[in-house]
Image (tube, rainbow, N blue to C red; front, top):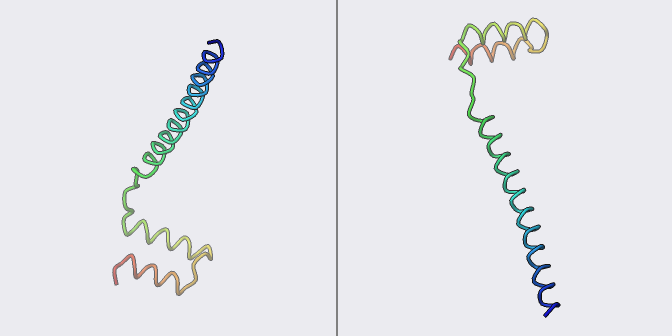
Length: 80
């Protein structure tokens, strides 16, 4: 009888440990999903055309954009 009790108790302890690990991983996964949702829900308002053109002009004057790249980006912003 003592052997059965010990085996049963070991099974209960192993189940509790495994259940705790599963709960931990589920909670961690849920937290990661919540973090992802918070990151993806916010979208900044679209910049106005004037703001975009000013930004492109700054990039062009600093040398990040070539003349051709600046012209293409400006045409895209203006819709032409």
